[in-house]
Picture (cartoon, protein in one colour):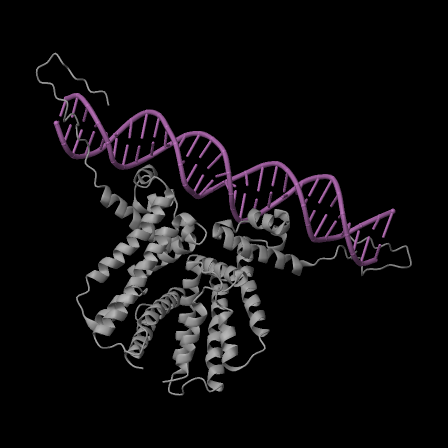
Length: 214
Length: 214
DNA sequence: TTCTTATTAGTACGAGTGTACTCACATAAT
DNA sequence: ATTATGTGAGTACACTCGTACTAATAAGAA
């Protein structure tokens, strides 16, 4: 704070007294911590999402984690954000159109492999926590809204591809699809199904087939 | 333990030395505790389901709770059992037939009033816990199976009432109904909808309507 | 080099946890 | 009245929790 402005020397520099210390890759740190948090959430549940536990899973000191996330609420919030980012990234990378796009888009929200299962378990754990922790509600709603948008987009894509019967109500079908998707996901979570023995994709496909006709 | 068999007295009784002490209404106790647990689960979440917390909510001493439920796992298990019992009792009390019965039957599984919402929140909290606590899995599966049976029964009732299109696959429709029901329930839980502004019943009814036709 | 910061390990505090006791008291069957 | 038991209140132990420090070390920019 105290700048030693030496007025008796010709070269007085009021600027650029910053030594520019150790570089920080804060982004990578927080990302690593949040991903470790997802692993912890799936393995140990909500009670495992503690400062010491996550720090150990990340492989850093508890104090370092405390510097990246000043409070555990910030950590929980960022976990929900990370889940949204990861799903969004996967969906954006899809290079498909029409019904095929819709299929893959919705499958990204079902626990069909380790990664998606981990995300979904973490999402449900934090979502349930938000039922009794109002601080977490905004973040949970944000993630939920993203899923809502995906379902609405799915219906629109089907309609544009001519695979959505014009007599149906797009608004209603989008909301029904959202509910069905959540239900299928829960069913898959609880039964701990293996990736390929799962009946989730066929169930979803059958429902989408119906939307094409009256 | 030590029986004073006085052999010098004529009337020696080797049996019936039990004084038969204080009467117990253990059943009412456990029920009161479990119901308090549901209240705690909805208000404070899983972290509130502690020995001291539940005892305080029940209005008894912690030691008394500990006598009724020797371990907290037993308490959590009984909560799931109580939820199943309460829903089963409500469903059994329905005096309806055909579509009306199906409607009311399924509405018993949606959070349409304080009681049903409390049950559902508790069920979800404990269900999520069972994802990382294998001890709780059997009880959670038992409750889930009960819901499955209800959905299958709903389809069968519709079929017998002639409100289920014969071209549809009952097995698939039962599983889809289950998923949809869970999804609608989640949607209702998170949005914290008021009892009457809810769109859950109409959404469910609309789906059931579809089952009657091709 | 020097300077500045991030990271680390460690400690500490107050609180809450499950579990396991003890002891006085009230109550119902004998 | 006597007796065995359930209850309530309290205490204790060994944890873990979030949070907040300190001091030492490591590493990059000047």
